[in-house]
Image 1 (tube, one colour):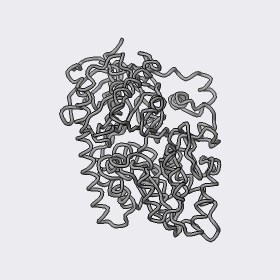
Image 2 (cartoon, helix red, strand yellow; image 1 turned 30 degrees about the vertical axis):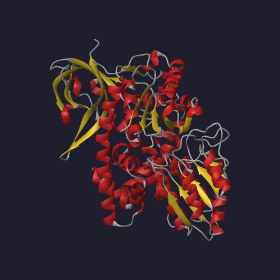
Image 3 (tube, helix red, strand yellow; image 1 turned 60 degrees about the vertical axis):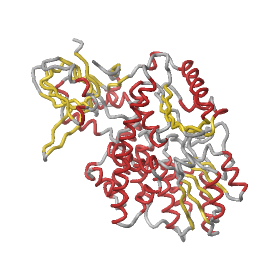
Image 4 (tube, one colour; image 1 turned 45 degrees about the vertical axis):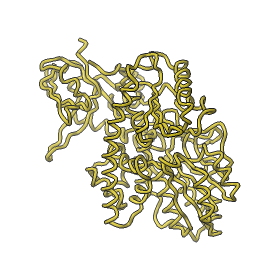
Length: 572
């Protein structure tokens, strides 16, 4: 019945408990599981401090060079072009840099590429248009580190380029005036996992420190942290280290934001401002902002985030909501078609590759992510156009997908990304060759056991341990996200006192669970996407349940609920 292989963490050692007696055992267990083992690490993790835990931006390679050049452009009244990206991370970063430079009185324009036309990153046609409009300095946001030819072309036309990016460093860097990217091998910056908007925020911090005394920002850089949080979470960047501090304070700013676009997205998607968390960004705000670049143009999201008009904010947020619903329908259809194309997924298929002519490139990444989660192996999904195909890949922790794609760079037109997510463009004549070479590479790198779907569980609990105290201990570890997932627990031998399918098409599972111990407590539980198990679970069955503990609020009442991560027939 279980959908995954359960991996329960080792019990926290006694010497760790004795070293930190002030923490309840379950808190110590969660710290130990996350490899947080010194008092300094504990303080930074549980109590991120904006003033103390953010690193000096000038530790980043080329940061000083970039800031000096921007100030020079300001003093010489040069025209600057902010070149963003079409996702929530790139749009958020572009908004911040645009507004900061505009407030300083600079002549600044913004360009966001079209996913459907120019594709990811810089392109020569756009660069020509920048030159014609009088641009002298280009500052990239969330892109540029792979654009060797395009930066060279900009240089040839007499423009200079500052690259700000966070993507994996390619073998050859562009000849830019400055490259601000903490992922550079020779960069001594202490934290390597900033988002694109995070790198821009560090640039803004550095700019604020370096500005002449007669110049200053109209508002503190802290008021841009709402956008930093949105971009960081939406881009699935690890919520650890400096990102944790940025997101924690970003959520606080988001609760108080006066940015009309964000206010109307939250209203439209049912987000409560008094109880914001990373789930709201990841599943409500982020998808709507991303929908613009996926199916239309990212300018819609940019205009929404920068508008000062209430009427315009309502119009644009409504538009994004419609586009997002369209995106959901398309994703469902392509999932079905891709599954049919892939057929039976056997162990010899270490990587899955699927492509279709009516699969918009804006949603192939979402489909790849869902297939990767379902089949626990790397997946590449492409939109096949007349002459070339545009694809997005998602991977499992044990497989570096950008490394795999780079082995085929000789037949690719474009490529870039991270170890777990990447994109590429390829001529159709090489599609089959590309798929075969990826399969051979994956077969060498991945073992059959690497393809098992694992579920990490933080601790095995007794039913009496499931309490509001436990809920409050868990919340100490927020904000949650990649590399700091919400803690999961397992309680064994719970009796099924009620079971039914709920939601659209019965996709979800509603359970009433009862302790078989002396307390006979009952626990409501919800399993999203577990509706297919309704025929396999019967009243009176004894089950083990892996879950996240959450507070369920309804009609003013507040109760604990188990959010099912997996369920199995009890082993004892």
